[in-house]
Length: 393
Image 1: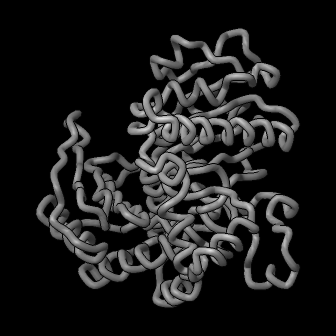
Image 2 (image 1 turned 45 degrees about the horizontal axis):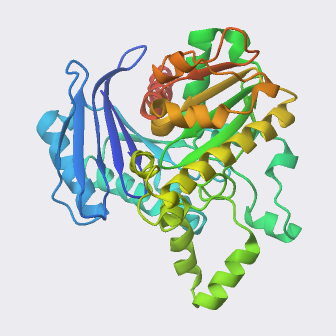
């Protein structure tokens, strides 16, 4: 068996797979809203359509990890797991997935300042699983690796060149999701479509877009950290540096306090003043102008990115919506695509509201698709190949 662990800033997703040529999912779930009052544990089995959900009695990320391991050990014999795959959000110079060694863990600890919201939790997950199951192979799957193909001009940040020596440039994230979506696009629409000019929109609590050509990343909205790009649930997205200076100065904020503000108090939550959850905002939009404006800004910024990436790609052949919002919110897809007919993007309203795979009109020049993403599934493929290749050596 293979176990995939996807540690977020306030969640832990997991998926268990039967090892075969194509890994077969047995069980999956997550602990969500860690650090909040309503922490939930949910899971589903592959042969049972309904999801089981209940409150999780945990009060920290460390206790959530212990809770997850204890629960997993009651479901399966973890000694039968051949490898554990971990999603590592920030990989710096790592271009390929890597077997986790003490040296790699130490390197990850050194770059915690690059991603203080994710790396400490991901390192903690690695170390706790190591303590409980020291002989099990662990593999790091880096979310930044997909974007290493971006041209240098897309990676450069317009700050003094000396900072580049410290590794400060555009990295991009959601790489495992984008890698999966390209594979899924090829299965659904063929190689020509997957190798064409594609814009991928991963829209969830964390949200980003990527421009892809010939199967390689050309540009992406997230930058040095996942806080950049379009507005997200509680992340600001791109921000005028003068605003940062003004807020820190007038509010007397430390660097850590400002980092918390732009990652946990901003975005949809900051604009609406009520919620960072898109479902909540859509329900409130008719009665609350703040919620309506949060939704409008989200869609407007995505629309601008699509236009920018069409320019970077020299046109667009396929637009893919994914992530919790992208897969389920027809009204968001509709709002994003309104006014983009000049690019050849035209939605079929019935297809869109039915959440069909292909939601564009037959007359439109751009195929617009809804494809559910599967980061854990992508990780399982990567891990399976690595341990299979290792066994052949």
